[in-house]
Image 1: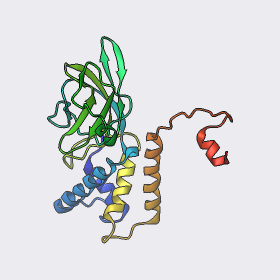
Image 2: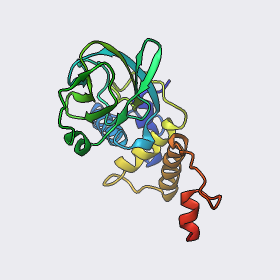
Image 3: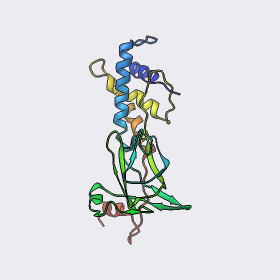
Image 4: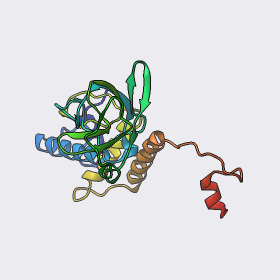
Length: 228
């Protein structure tokens, strides 16, 4: 378990802001907690900083389907939809392909109802996102979505949180980078370790799709590199 205070204190130690055993003032705690949450908010816009991709199941119908706190799908509003969504009907899974807003705009009969949707478009508005399925389900169906699990902003400085491996170190060293300017000189080693910790998270979260082999026995990427 990790608290925001433990991350903040570690970050302050890394750039020499406090003496060993010294308590931070209430003003510093509030300011540094805000800085930590700002950093987490920024990380949540980057695909390779998500913690995981999980499945959400909801019975839905109509057009559009709202998603976000208080929406039809009452979860944290996702910034994007992940591949792998489907509708389950009578034990059979029917995949949904996500299309771009321009592709969805080209559909003339957007109000066409149907039992099963083939494609979907997601508009990540605030505070609620909207899912537009086509054809849209006029009756209730079981929708399965793959959604990003993001880092949660710290609600309080002493609240315990479970963090995925590697995140505590990356947060502490990266927060030291955020806080040091204008206060203390930051050691180059801290900068290197912070960058390495973030790279480790990106490597853990990256998904490399398998590539089919062409007639040359090479993937398209290998053919491009070799000039074929």
